[in-house]
Image 1 (cartoon, rainbow, N blue to C red):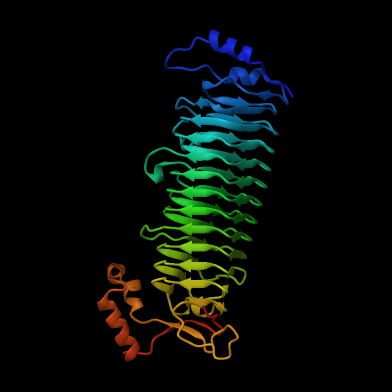
Image 2 (cartoon, helix red, strand yellow):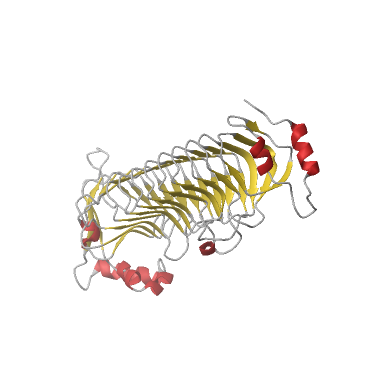
Length: 403
């Protein structure tokens, strides 16, 4: 292991013709570090961009800032087996077309950890980059509207990466495009447009992540065999927002997640093909306006052992048959009015949900203002007491679990 001598770094800092408005380029120190070596620059601010072409370790020891000067990408890792840690990386360019980022990876087996990345357009961009570890980084974008920011973490045709325990705040999305077999664990995402978005990205695992105060939580589009478990998604209150939005994705498993205080917990289309089935088990839907919303012509999803508690509405549909043919089994419904006389832990009669006055505010969004108001409660009571026509059955759970 080679370590660049501090005296050499200090000499270079002294002879570089920098002014009060510029900083010595870190590229000089990187170029002097041999393959396999470790570079620990003296504390201070250095100018970018930095291009790493050999397998080295760049360690800022929490005292080094790399300033991109508002042009291009700040750090570009081109070599395999590079480690970049403990740096403050800031002030990238503003080009969406060029994907100006704090860190760009076009190599494999890199470790990017414990960095603070701020005032950048995109945070960490993996481009055809595989088997990397991205962990314990603090990432934020520009202080502007979410639609003008870049992604905090962006994967493009990248496979086998571990994205672990990063904090993403004030970015646009965390985006995976055509990227498979990645593991995304324990990340905290807040104040973004979309927490995570997967497009044509199969066989990924999303676990133990927390998404809070974003416009939308997790979005899956044409992404198959995705395992979503033990996440918490909370406080998504924008009009039209949802914690989970899943479209045209096959064999998606959604298990043991907590969906709390959102406009809509889950939005999903009914299966267009037999394989487009969602498996939802052991999830908690708490204090949401609508726990689940299904749209399409028929059901077919599997929903077992989920908890529905203190939601304004448990299930909403675009048409009565959108959720009726789902496999509902053993869920806990707080508003279940049956009994368990044989003490087997399940209700003696099915839990059934019908369309009453709820349909008013589904068909007329402006009526949402009056939900749970005395007027709407009276209308609902009258419809249940003496309906003008037979109400449509939305769903039936034959063996609901007792609270």
